Length: 259
Image (cartoon, helix red, strand yellow):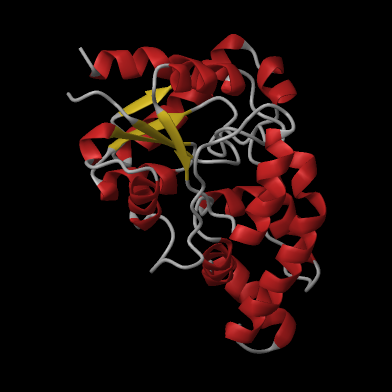
């Protein structure tokens, strides 16, 4: 394996916002506003996609589709999708800065990787406007990246590989052999797989776990292991090359690739 030159991180649930709660709360509130509730579990099924695509996916769930039809006497349409997206953005913009705390171990681990000469890129399901809030808020708390790519001006978001390729262009990385993509959702894993880079999942703090840090620490050891094993299995089934308990295991994994 060639020396790794670039690690491309996801944001919410991977490096900031332990448990990935900012978008979950905004999706729930935006659908509650039209009297068609969605659950946290339903929103987490599609996390990692662009937010407009996640809204389309939520509307397309059979339960949600039927609830909408029962309330409004018709099927949902693109105008309904756009309406929820407008509300979602307004809600999210008001709360994003509150969900910018780095996940434990992130700042120290990223600085260790950077000291080893590795560039830190990033991809996200957020738009550029959203990241204009998240990036400075995270930087104020010690976490910064060398590059951030959104899907705004690309052919599509995850699970397509375009954001990874744009990071490679921006950071002058000449081959996928030099790249590791890290994330906390199934869409993240598939993004890395589709880009033909090493695709790595993190469990603790992830959308797939869906727990706050306090909830995670409160679990009995056997229950924590059971839930972590479930997440690991889902990520491996999606094609992950490795699934790590936390980002703090990443430097050792990178070293293992370079031996």
